[in-house]
Image (tube, rainbow, N blue to C red; front, side):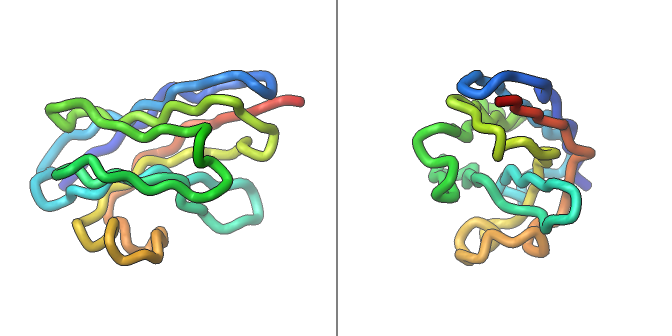
Length: 127
């Protein structure tokens, strides 16, 4: 079992910044791919960024490249998503998720490939 608890969401104006945190606990040795997803009402959950714990390799979707940074602390207790230059279209519920190595390398970056999920934290960006 892996437990994930997100925090750091809030309301900001366009151009502002937020840092999301995901506290990770439990049996994490197998679940080495950590991802951030987001979802708005009526839309499918979308992968935003993921990081592979062993070598810190990262992946970002095109719409957040250069603005968002995913990272983790050395003990792998916390995964972060630093979000800069926020836009109204970034408004969503953001979820942290844990998957296996294959979740990071498959190329699909789909929710179905991640096993454990947090409860989500809301990010609202106003224009």
